[in-house]
Image 1: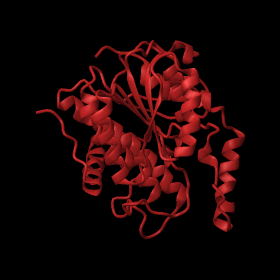
Image 2: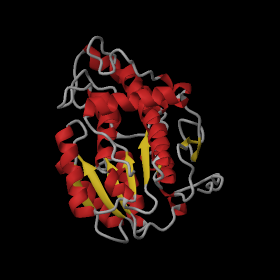
Image 3: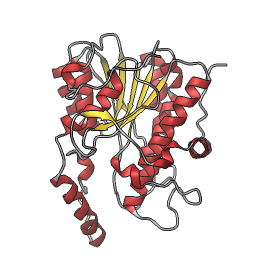
Length: 315
């Protein structure tokens, strides 16, 4: 695959190539970065599926995306990444009703939430941000491989710099620290991207896996959802500091839109804002642990064991 051209100094949604004929699935598309990504892709002619957990928010979001669309009408795909039964149900719908998926944007996520478990008993952050996306990507792999040049974009975070995936307790069953748990899940996103691309290449497929992060962007990830008490107060302090420096979500969505749409982008590329926390997209560095093939392979095997999802690559 040829290399993508160097990024212009101010790449914006106006630079997105025509998306006519492409089908895109975006997780967490009911608000924030996911909604902005859905709007931008629909405006360029893509068929967009908004994969969302909250049906009421999804209904409002699909109307906003429809208003921007220049091609097919956008659709809502019910998906709760914190429930593997919901993941399988959404994948079955894609297999039966959608056909080929050209683009998957693994955008949904939770950040620094109180200690809680997914429907399958995983830590809420590791289970939603990483394991849910691992399972969903694997479940719709056949639909992705039906496309001529499928691409998977997984959204990480600057918080990945502080991440370590704990091999002894990745689901935080002993001690729980909400910010390290978030950083772990975001490092896992980068390890998943690297290993997904390596496995796609080894299988001789055309699938490309890349990653992006939004820097500090004003989204609903910073909401505490009514949480009260000392833990909530302490969690709110770094969140309020982050919001002080946050850029608008339309700017924060640019790196993942670049990752999703620019032709010839090399696999395992990682994009973020020019100044790391804000600015126009550029290629960026990552936590040194994210470069470890052994670490990525171990996480992949762990993810298969925990989710029961094994990727069905062509022979």
